Length: 401
Image (cartoon, rainbow, N blue to C red; front, top):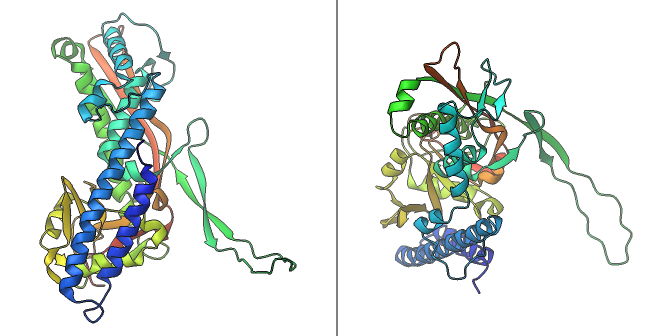
């Protein structure tokens, strides 16, 4: 019987806490060489536990997918990426859906017609299995979208109020037989998570669709890639004006915790250690670093504080780690610069919220009367994003003030 991934993750948390404790020691409490050796040993343990936990989680996901597809999970099944793809329960449905799209283009299909698409005229809704496929691709490509708390607003308003605690409730102690009086209740405010439309609206000629192989897939890929890539930018650096407020823009009073650099226009190793110490343990357990690839490349030259020969960044396969926490590449994170906030450390399931009122909708319109030579494609996602618990994330500033 396979171990519970939660038990492995609890062991990983203990190793990370011990690593932070060792790094905080002074030379008088533990010599630098001994600290270095112990940190390297603990880093190796953390990487092994991280890999084991990830493997167990993937196994659980496969078992769940097989159950949903009505298949009997096979003990000891191959869990490679290729094998998972070959058993994807959506594969047959997607094949049928693509055939339906081609029949629409050929003028052979007359079902699923809509009367209002928001762009004028009727059209055909793209089959749902294909819509879900694009959503999965987007979440795998964007760590902010993948790791944030996700709220389904479909079927109701395009906004919701998320409760947020402003003051703690009080508790009291009493003997077993002593009377109990009331204690002060906690106070809650709210954060509004509002959704806005991000869309693409294209025309293509029938000649192009008739002559270019796999043309319908090409145009749908382009349309949805563009929609979701732009949504990813806003989840990172959006200004909140008819679009999400980005993770890296939640600064200043009421914003996330902040950790300054020791110099302007740069990040330093001590800053990363200080950021880890600033985040509370309940958020550190699921915390990761978020930055773009250029920023990560610049960090490869840094060493651990007070440990000249120990790199700040370690690797397990293609995944980078800093102080025991994985680095996730968010392409739209800001670059290092004077006054910029290029790095975030946090538990995004508590620090950032994403809402979906319309997760992914696509219309295909073939006008056989007024413009028979043209095909219209319209892709829409109605999404929102907002910072949530400010104490669950630390932003690192590449500036000393």
